[in-house]
Image (cartoon, rainbow, N blue to C red; front, side, top):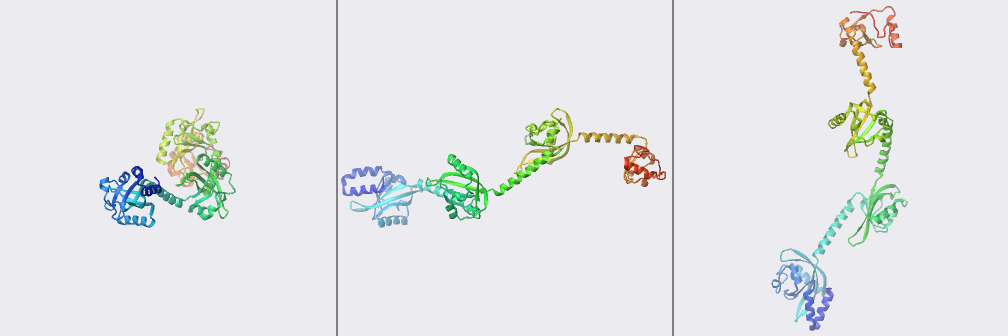
Length: 473
């Protein structure tokens, strides 16, 4: 019941005693706590059940005792309460913290006035329990304090606006970013900060209206006229009074934009290199599936285009899939593998010999994303090597003495026949000059002629291999 209405009824009762029955019913059924206390000694002479429930005592424990005896509040608090009534005659919404019988506290909002009961001055008090309300208020206050701390210390610029775009608050980061004071930012409004009415602004506003939040990019203008790109996040919320507000968080992404442009150029250069290299380049994800291949890879493995290789298992390019497993084991142990030889498998099921250099590729956080490899077809090289080894082995077995030397007359080849004829081993002879090992005997002018023919034609016409008559040392 409204306190002023109750007081008027009390006043009416004093003049019209017949209304006591109605007043008694209201006194009993009132949802607020009601108590009557004598002014002279502070004793409680009557109260309703709500009052008893508030303080946790029984009626027998309360009637005839003072609030001080019940330890409801201290002497100072009780005197301040009474003096406030005397000073204002009628007291409204006076907050007091009351201790219950069990030692817990409740917050009571009291209204009171002096009345006369049977010729004695009495204080009529009506108390409303606001403990839960205070709890909510304290929680809101705590949240507001946390928000204020966050608002003032966050590194991103934050603007608080009302739905029409009027800025009502700006944090220190916004002041630093734009170069304006908070007061200047609020006067400018949202449109005063957005560069030339950026066309993205209506799109963001529409999305925010439809969904309650939006995210995108806008171009802003600083106080010194500098234009910068900003990443914007906006959302709608209600303040403690139920008013709709919009928060706009702005992050300067100038450096990121420059980095993205540099990365794009780098990727373009990288892709240009990949598209023009002779060796095959193949990249696979962590599951071993191909996610990138160079044109040279498609040509080497006889695909029509690199796109046809995307999604294939990298293991399918090996004639023996165990080679791929072994390569991965080496990568785990060494983080990089060089000159790994294997037999590769083309699309048409033909095979060829390859040499691979492989390593991991990583994301921006340094986490492994998969593997990458450069593949070289070494079929011809292997065949040539085998042919050379075969010829060298053949020459080493003949009985004729065969010596090879370079233009400086240093020995480069020394077969078994020479070793048997002159007694020098290959290790002793190679890289020595013929004059250090042997005393060659030439006809006059023959040595100069021989060297010239070798330099001009690659061999001396007396023999396709160069067989010169020599005498032992």
